[in-house]
Image 1 (cartoon, rainbow, N blue to C red):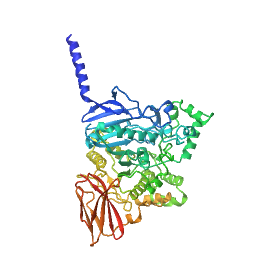
Image 2: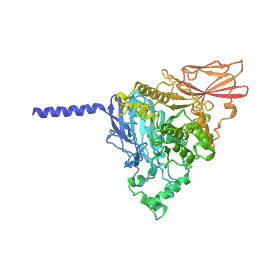
Image 3: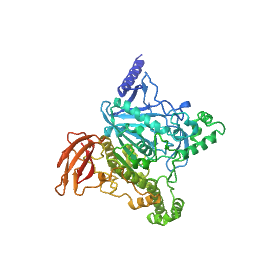
Image 4: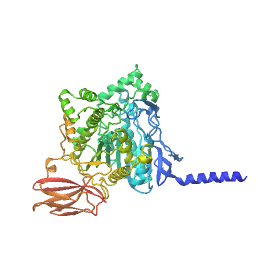
Length: 613
């Protein structure tokens, strides 16, 4: 009898302990319960859409059904169907479940009104998930980022590959716009709507949402800057190792039609789609290719220019100014393709790479900028740098320049050069995705990063990256006291922050000569501004400082002049007008981004002024 009492007491204690650690939040669709992990509330696997299965396969996502019972959000959701490749490996496993449209939330304070950071995972739009494990840890676990950064973190999933991006005539009759494709994009947009409608219950501020992503997640983040459908759903953006990217609709249709015909060879287009909806997702995933092969990025499945979500190619949209203007961080890593390039490279392979991808007229200059050397190490370094600069360094500069020239909101560029001890041992440098360990502060939890391999420099990197990212999410400016000043980006100067254990913030020009070369290869002529010339011409001798500021900015000119000034909010609303004033007091204004327009001698100058805590 006494033994039964003890067992019953232990059971009650266990139930009571779990109740103390669980937390119920009411969403628009019903209550959900999560766990308390140290000081963070954690909700894993909340549905933001109905399962996209059967007749919902290849259709726009629909909201989830309401539920009265408490939904237990205790486990990561299954990955979306995919053929999963490890970076640098050509072997793969088929995995995933079509019922995969879920998100995860971490919050340090359910009543906080905190900045919200929404992460889109990478994987070439063909693989990846919010529960992805890398180096023995959940790479995108948001607990440390949320707790240490005092932000609400959300990670979302979206349909991948053929299920997320197929374009086919048989699908076009199913919607009033007469188009198909972009289902993965629509998933992301619906997730952002869910966040707008529900995140306040988790302690988040729906008016202060930062969208960030790496690799294909960065591509998707950049693409969402280009569509009106996402214009009011987020307010700041961080693009890591990526730029916006869209595919031609006709080319995507041809590719998808050939694939469908390989499964179903007869019948009308509509009949073929009906048959395709019955084919197991695993069989469809078998058709996917490796996203990065030999250091070459292969985006087999991408969002398309459909004239509804996306009306033109990214460069043209940005050049026209018809994109969602907001503060932006964009950057890349110094050795992006070091994990994916061949492990053994001979000088002859560098020559072969150049000959394969470059017209003859550019080959001598390429080999001069990237000499193959005489050893395998020298050759591999040249090989990696060619692939890194051509696909990342130069393209990131183009995008940073074009956006900076065509919006008043600030742009901040980074170049990640830190190499952790394991990568140093393997001579991999700052490879594709390495910065994610430090943004999420999870390198300390990784098998490879734990114990004696976690160095003081790693701790410094974690602190710096987390606080730059969360400061930006909070105010639109990554700078704050205690961090090396990150210079605001200007297209004419190309200044940036080199992210390493001890950044100094003084660099301008990331591999400029090499980036100029790759611009020449693709015949990129540079960006212009859609703003009028008078608005961007400098007024010689005029100075606005300090910027950023925590209270006031001073206006100075090197000679006595008459001038007028006007202060605008980031949404374009005029806040105040001034005449010949030497100081503008911002202490009564909220932290964030403001536009100061100065007029003198018939000319205008627009300054971006940032107020920080």
